[in-house]
Length: 110
Length: 117
Image: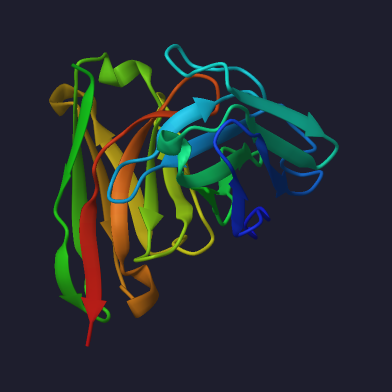
């Protein structure tokens, strides 16, 4: 059970877009369409932003979008805003009622 | 409102045990699978354990064999018993609701476990 691979950091100016990748294997990301993304501000609980690769929960702005190709999933934040500065984590179902998280990506709004 | 509140954390010696609790409110607890997720200080999220609505259980390799997840639907409470604690078990332990879509949609604020010699 190795963690999914995310870049440690990403950045963009307000109004720009940033894309975060999350790489796994055929046993997790590549095997199921059950990738989710979480936003975590310092000292706060994680918040679900994307589920089932590309679906947004009610209340999540459509600036957040998700996709998947093979063993790699991606989260794109368009029209960056100051409040988007946070840590982002991907998660994937790995079968047999087991889940994995990525190491997290710190997004900085320049 | 929908809420999860953890308790039971603290400072424990290497080799000791702890039982963590998570009280749920605002939703039908028995309908949902429930997870424990931990986060070491300054580190990322790590999935720990899951109990399905029918009490089927699963564990991360890092805690398998020394942890037990359980639930009491009559008390709307989730538990995690961790034995043979190691320094690397030091973390904020949070419970999270399974959202019927293999995602974690509701999170508690967590309870801190510190394993020290």
